[in-house]
Length: 246
Image 1 (cartoon, one colour):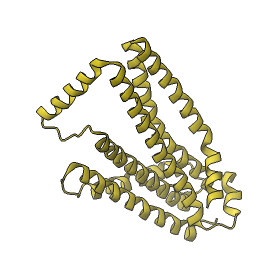
Image 2: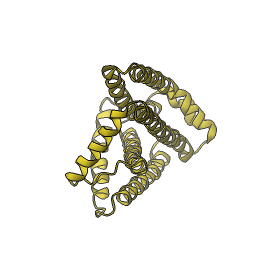
Image 3: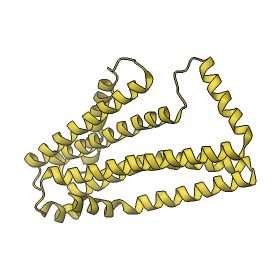
Image 4: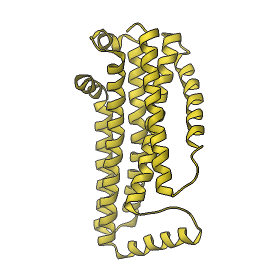
């Protein structure tokens, strides 16, 4: 399994390197603005970091799906499927590598954001007042949002879990369409339509969770998304064993 995961990482390392370089550039812009007390530079750096973190984590999942699609529909994955590994190991390596990458990226950006916020609060006295104003505004509007570090981590965990579930569901859809339409030009379109239907069902299931204490609610929905991801993974492996000549 570890060798397969290393193989998957080698196929996606370049996009991760590009993401890291872009993050370093954005962080440099932010820090220069902070040290020079330039609100324009700080603002530009913050916007860049938010966009890179958001779209970067999304692309990590998409990149893995593109690799899976090529593996199943072109000769790129021929040697991989000729190795003495079961469908559970082959797909499991892809899902684990992608899931670890998604959660490590999320943890990295949470840590970076916490560090940047701490730097701003230490170096810019006015920022403390801004944070307090935002918290008081949300309380006055009765918006159930907790801006504590623990709560923010739980919110982001929920987002990452739902994105991982979406990625595994998409992999399941790709495998279904590949089993039926290998090599046809409609393959990607059918995969996308299947993904939309399954993802809609997933969101409906998660929506059945009753409202409760906000942090507990997000933890429960995270577990549901991870459970759906596990079910989609098992289903995909069964289809790979029965319908695809691997």
